Length: 304
Image (cartoon, one colour):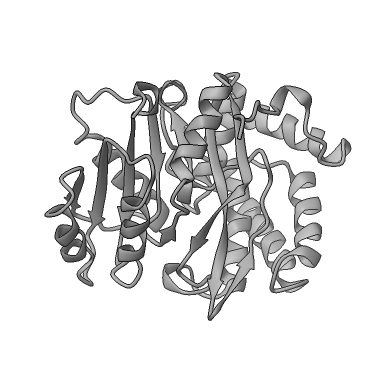
């Protein structure tokens, strides 16, 4: 393994017994494996930790880190604290990249090799990922994505970028991955998702902690408020999602309703004011430039 390809992976896992074996198998099958993989059992009650322990016996580079879930923490905040708990166990290990991986994702075997090659090709690429599709029954469903956004479920940080932005912000309704991407760009890094690297999200959307699809869309709207998104951007985004994302029409309206509800409650944001100012400026540019990606944002791709 090239020294520059040295990376550590952290996976927060809460009640993922049904899916985590698929995730582990997909990482074990990687052509470039992590130096260390820390799977944080975030207070699971379904045997998630027992499944992880079975794999650690045969793969010494995989470690299970138990964490006691704190009462009152939202799922999303607990998820971030679990990542921090995993990083606390890295010790003095020397690594150049940090991968965050959800416990219900199956990766293609060359996922990390290709992501790291792209990051090596562009020294300003601070956060990178592929994209994912949702497993729905026996089929797969495409998920909308923006090339500048990297989903936390499978994102890879350049370690210097992660340190520069101070890691993830704990947001009540999620969106910490989006926040991280904006923070990275504000500090001069590039962020990019490569559409040719497709992972599978094994947990059906609308199950688990989030509830049904309308509940998810409403929560995403509230998350836009906590992130600090500009009202015009949220309005345009919601209209687009009415025709691009299920449940059609109602989903986009639920997203907008969630944002408006949070506005009326005027709850305190956790995102720093300078970052809110930066992301709103970028969002308005996206609205008025018809989502055109500036040349300065684009990345150098590794040669095939």
